[in-house]
Image (spheres, rainbow over the protein chains, first blue to last red):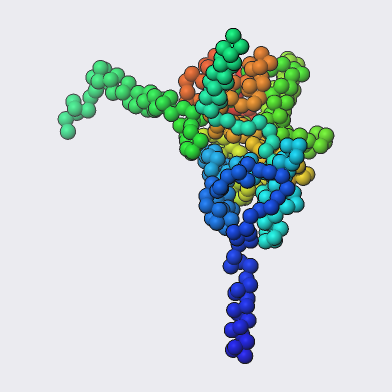
Length: 153
Length: 247
């Protein structure tokens, strides 16, 4: 009897889905292309992101809503901006569509998320820019315009 | 101790009181000027006091520029059901009982310093950010709508239906209460104007002035200096940060 329990325990432990993460070391295969496809690594090491992305997101959401910290490093908006795939005509495919970045793993692990009942699944609306970057971009634009003018002359 | 030691000369009294006043009022102001425009990675601080002043005389009847700008900024599309569709800012019409004078004014969250919505919230989702913005933390809002009942200004809305076309910068969804947040996202990114103020200025009406109360040169302070502003329902002593003048 004891032997049976032992072997049962070993089987349970080795097959326990919680002991390993879905897609460990696996590459995502998705329709379309995203900015993230072209990068070697996410904002943290891939291994860490696969297992702890929700910890970063939980942490960041409170900092953003309560303290007004708007850094991009761990923000959901930034995740989507980078991981959303675009189809042949350049239209973004929602990250919650079948086989897309968020959905693919979450279906496999049977973890239901409700981020996207409120958050946009594709980058939508005017991108938020800090004043400094707006000023910088204006300067760059001005330089480009003046360069073009000199070229025409 | 000798009684003479306690007596102040006129000169001594003036010197001491002026230095006390400068310690309390002047010196902190110098510092707040130095730290305008918060970097993205820093927390908001109580040295910034966002506020809005509305000049009702300049608000034009029939103009909905502020409302439209708010809808566009926050993606507040509705379902063509005015009774339940979300509204963060709305135009209301008031009539003086004695003179029958009709005025219109924009009504939104008044960003009280003593907000009744936060008092009644069972989860702490209604909260007042340290820089004075009253908002809903939709991650913890359970949709009980106590805050909507507590608000004397009818400033909050409840999302009754599934939404699909939210903007990246304005997450919102079914089952949560929402209201004007002084365009917190914009402000955190260094802007000093809200969508409604911007629209009102663009229309040339300049009825809405927004800004930082601790910056003496901000538009809101200039507006407050020009005319006497009052709070709506001042008897409730909620100390709103949105003030009105002209009625």
